[in-house]
Length: 282
Image (tube, rainbow, N blue to C red):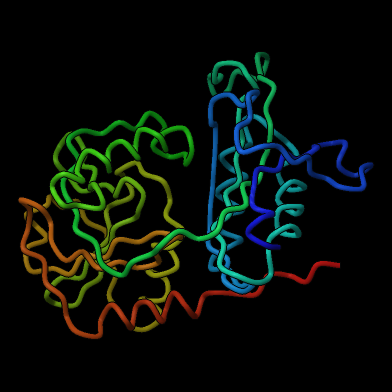
């Protein structure tokens, strides 16, 4: 697949099995697209992906209230993914030209469409400055997709401060997650810490892989309710499917963060080892 083939593909759904091509290709602007109900994305580098089955499970759980054919759709997505180059595809479920429904309203289920966006990987980084988010705009904190635009505006809001990521706090001032990332930090005693499960957030695939690998390597893992000042003297990792692991070099008007040489590189090797080849296309 070449860069010129990048674009938006709609899945034919139940008609896919009878079609020569399960996809219909449209221009980047789809006039029929409605509200974004769910989305997921991951990085594909020369046909290798980290945590693909976890992304699949997260996306299928998100679309379950609206569709019962998600598994067939995802199979077609995997078959369509490029086996060479560096790509950052995104799968989407959108309402089709009507307002977003109330989840659970089965009798009023809207027309929806499943799509694949084929996107080359944008520039990535290994470091980032963070800042406390001015507010929490999330309306569906457990589902990736509906709040993506609001979260992008949140990151834009902290950019004048020199920050590339906004850290969302709970009403009690506890660290929850980044606008587009999961957060993990390492205390001075070497314990690897993540926010407690009671704080609602999108289940980060990258954070989950890293925490499992850290535990397998002998690290002590703890969940904690922490405020920004509790991270004084800690090393903060900002985790996402796109960047992998970025080290927070500073927290604007926040805690004094530290870096231990070699520690982040070791954690990146944990993530790299989790990448697996895509299945061969028949």
